Structure formats: C-alpha cells, structure tokens
Length: 110
Image 1 (cartoon, rainbow, N blue to C red):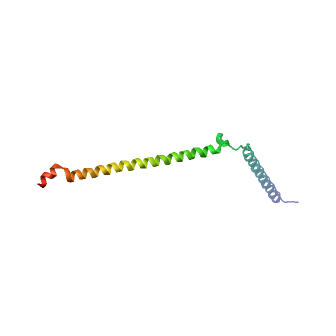
Image 2: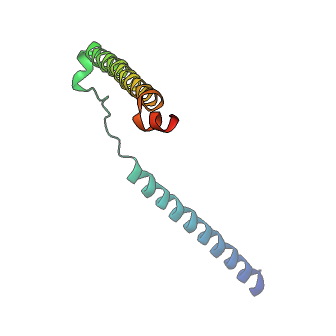
Image 3: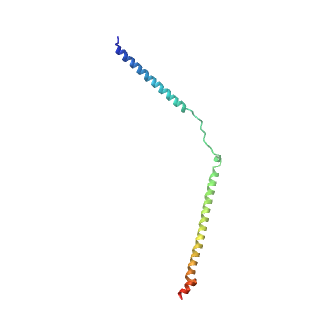
C-alpha cells in the first residue's frame, strides 16, 4: 500500500500534468483564434490605369514637355545675352561720353 505522502505526491503530479495540459490547450485555442482572424484572404487584382492601353502617349507627352523646356531655355539664353549686350554697349557709350564729350571735363582741362 501507498503511504499518504506518496498519494499526496501522486495527486500533485497529476494536478500539475492537468494544469500543463490545460495551459497547452488554452495556448492552442488562442493561437487558432489569432490565426483564424488573420486567415481572411482577399482576391488581389493588378491595377491598370486608363492610360495603360496607350503607353506611347505618355512618352510623347514627356518628349513634348522636354522639347518645350529646351526651347524655353534657348529663348531665355538668347534674350539674356541680347539684354546683356545692350547693357554693355550702353555702359561703354556712357563711359565714352563721360571721358570724351562731357563739357564739365572739357572746361576743367582748359
């Protein structure tokens, strides 16, 4: 026969095993719930824009924009160089006038 202490230890062991099994079961249930919530699967569809049928139009528009930008840059450089030329010629004329034709300077030299 078993002593009361052996019976008590045996009962404790059985209780511990039951608690472990319950814990494992509860963990499995929680895991299944978490996975069940994430298990919803949706059908995915590749997005196709309206311009998908005509990809050459996109390239043509981009090329036209680039061409227009180039033309604007060339015109801006030409206008800037024309204005710079006028300013330079004006300054040279003003300096020449002051040096050679200004009456005050002429009077001071005499």
